Length: 270
Image 1: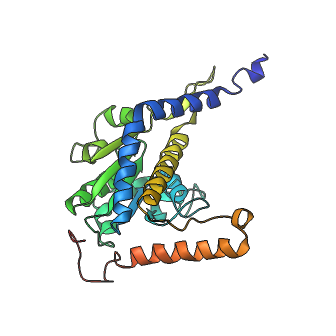
Image 2: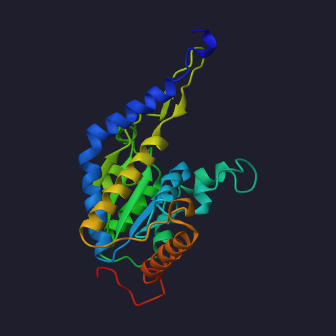
Image 3: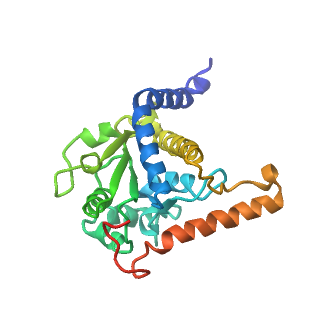
């Protein structure tokens, strides 16, 4: 093998190992999370998902996209997740600053009226920035179960930067480890000081789709068939449109009562 190809496939090998580790070591926690989510959806609850930075990606993977169904609510704040401009207005510096501002999470949470049957899944690789931590703290104060999908190694490395002295995993009812090393990147390059090729997205997406599939099975076994957003190439144009419309309508129905001001306060109620 030439020097130019020496690292070919190295990241893929690392990613495959991460997925194996996730399945063997976190399978029970993923199954528990799936049961909680199924119970929530069957009780007319909503499974909310939150993440800053690139942790927006698993939110969009869960819903709405082909092969997904209502019951899940992606909560992505553009101020902390719009990264493609990188510099200038709406740049990365501002986004990274905002996600470290204590008190901002409470302003986000004020937009929502949660049910006791709701759940919040928070994605954060490092688990040390203020907004994800305070989203967990605020949700638990409102009686909402919190699932953290994070790198346990990163949570435990170094001193917590939040004023509470805690990390995301400290404030969750259930933790699913992304299995990635501190710093996330998987491949060391000879001659380079720092590794490249982050792995957390691949395991975060695996967590999302494992939950999605396991929850769907539990819903069907309970007699509830959710409308799955499906390509016309699979079910035909008319059925695809019907499923899209049904999924969007059901999503709107579930969220309508949870927007602040839409109904009387329902904290701690069904």
